[in-house]
Amino acid sequence: MLVVVGRIGRAHGTKGEVTVEVRTDEPGLRLAPGAQLVTEPESVGPVTVASGRVHSGRLLLRLAGVEDRTAAEALRGVLLLADVDPTAVPDAEDEWYDRQLVGLAAVLRDGSPLGTVAEVLHLPAHDVLVVRRAGADEVLVPFVHAIVPEVDVAGGRVVVVPPGGLLGDES
Figure 1 (cartoon, rainbow, N blue to C red):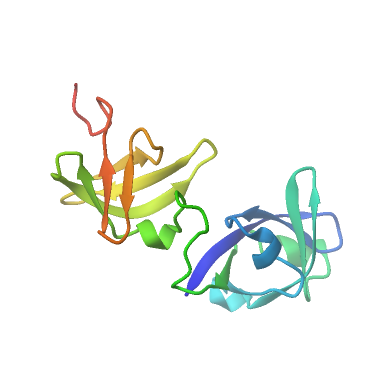
Figure 2 (cartoon, rainbow, N blue to C red; figure 1 turned 90 degrees about the vertical axis):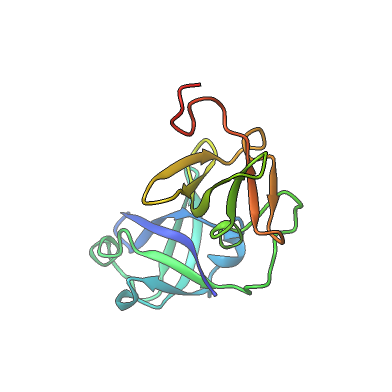
């Protein structure tokens, strides 16, 4: 199963390094030298990580065959994907992979349906669940314990306890 592990940002310097927005909890494994990654769009890759380093808190990668700034800049916005075991689960009890959450039913504490988790957004403050309700209506639910106190992957649901106004109500 392919999952996004990074997004290429701007070129760094003149020798082909690129900045990478990391989208994995395991960058030392997924983005290590020698790692072969599928790209989106597919026509750009696959790519192989030649080397990597952290500079001013940002991951810089050199990809095999990318020798100058022009070639590096041409990769801006490309998603990097790694093949992962679809049965793997995180080590910590209160952690989930996006693929485990997408598709789960979102229900209120009393069991009434809210919608389906359509996407997980990774924002600077915290993650957010995009819950698609009946029709095309969506609601953004902060993925914090106070609002999503229960995640039951085996049961196929997440319980949402929305504060007033979150669902568009006036209370």
